[in-house]
Amino acid sequence: MVTLTIEGREVIVAPGTSLLEAAKTVGVLVPHYCYHPSLPVAGVCRMCLVEVEKFPKLAPACATTVGEGQVVHVHSEKAREARKGVLEFLLINHPLDCPICDQAGECELQDYTFAEGRKDSRYMEPKRFNPMEDFGGDVVYVPNRCILCTRCVRFMDVVAQDPVLCVAERGDRAYIGKFEGQDLTSPWASNVVDLCPVGALLSKDFLNKARAWELDRAASICTGCSQGCNVMVETRDGVVVRIRPRPNAAVNQHFACEVGRMHYRWMNRRDRLEVPMVSDGQGLALATWDAALTAAASEIASAGRVTVLASPALPNEALFLLQRIGAHVGASLVMTVPRGPEAPLPGVTDLALRAERAPNHTGAELLGFTDVSSPMAGLGANDLVIVADAAVASVPAGVRVIVVGTVLDATLAGATIVALPVCNVAEEDGTFTNLRGRVQRFLQAKAPPVQARPTYRVLGALAEALGAGAYPPLAADVFASLAAAVPAFAGLSYRGLGLQGADVTLPAEATT
Image (tube, rainbow, N blue to C red; front, side, top):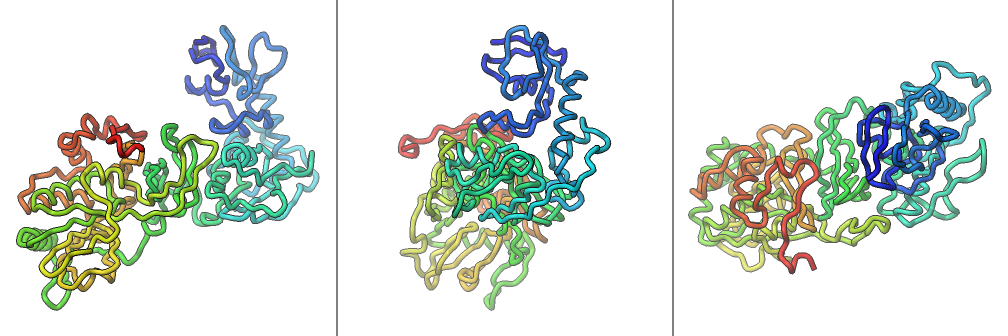
């Protein structure tokens, strides 16, 4: 280990650590633009210059490794004066269009200029102007704002290994360009928007939807596939408007794919199941929660054969309670896992858009659910199916259905005898288990509609009405019951999971 001093604080880090990363360990932020922990070091912006005692000149903190006994000054007059010069240089041509720029409130150029820049400009000539360009996919490029940090170029070249971007021209005329005939159509291309430290690369999908300070944010897990990428769900006035990656070195580093980013519109569906309903013989009629739960329990208890069809996008807590209900009445536990083409991110080990397009099929398997292609096959008159937020193509004649879901699909409407409205993933707390067995929490991001309740609370009440046990009304407590009952989850708790998750031990056949 190497011991040095940064801003008067003793730092002990591993050999080879950069001064910039070493400073982070003691809470000292070194301003930077081109540096990113998941990209190769370029050292082109010169914004991270720091003063190191006995060094003949200022050193870039991103490209200088720690040395035994070094004394580093991040905020010395010499270092701050150099960074002030860098900022003045960057702002020579950068338009001061913060009031209309989508990056306002999240712009590192804005932040560092406020913290360390000049109060005025000495530049009197007209600023450079280049028209906005569509880069393809979800990305639009605004060259006037670009500071040529090259994060986007390095990401596409080294991480995505799809080198479609380059730095064109030189000197004052330089800009980010595309190689002829190529576009940003990679399944991972939108990461360049997150990597851009200014407003030069923007998402078409989010353009002009909201300002950064208008958004509420909640830590969550992507539901686009079984990778379990950590994401931040951002809402404005109770509507999900953006999903962005949240760093987790064990799962997705700093990245998310296009499918995951766009997999949020269903969370804003307006055709939600909003109130409990019970069939009165003529069709579904509104009911109280107590009446609907009583009717559902009565129908399940009196049915000859019961099947539980669960969505693999349900959280572990809901699947555990469905398993308890299924075990109590001797039901079959099934699910159908949607699938699509797999798309790996070549520069990151074990990160891909997975073929299984559901976030929790591994958790469902651990809790006893079987993947079937035709869940309704073989069912007939007097059979009952509990459809827990799963898609169903058709229902055989005579089969009765109890819906526990966010919507009531038309295919189920005629067969449904009780419908219980529940929250979607953005409206409740819970956990998913990804394909590698990592259990990760997600947090509530917005309020549920009308009378919809958290899935674990509805299923807990239904289990209790059936005599299948009593379950507490909090997600953390339901998970504690799960961890106590299912060996694979033994020892886990919400506190222990934190927001980075923890691993369960998967059966040998699940890891091959």
